[in-house]
Length: 100
Image (cartoon, rainbow, N blue to C red; front, side, top):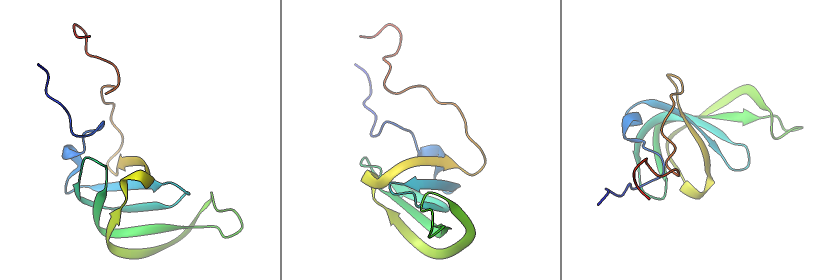
């Protein structure tokens, strides 16, 4: 019997660390990950939103605004990256060798 994971990605290693989150629609937020659930709802503390160019909504500007404690809805989260860099993880959608 194999242990069931709560989510497709493991965020436990990122708790209390700075992460950058990209949301559907192009918004990007950076903050300290304080918690998450199985639906990938994220709680970020001391969060900062990177503002987009009004003429081109997919382009970020140098402007940012502090938003403090923020909840990112899981259905809108498209990308989560630790600020200390990316690391390779095992593909959660490929069965481990020896299992079917």
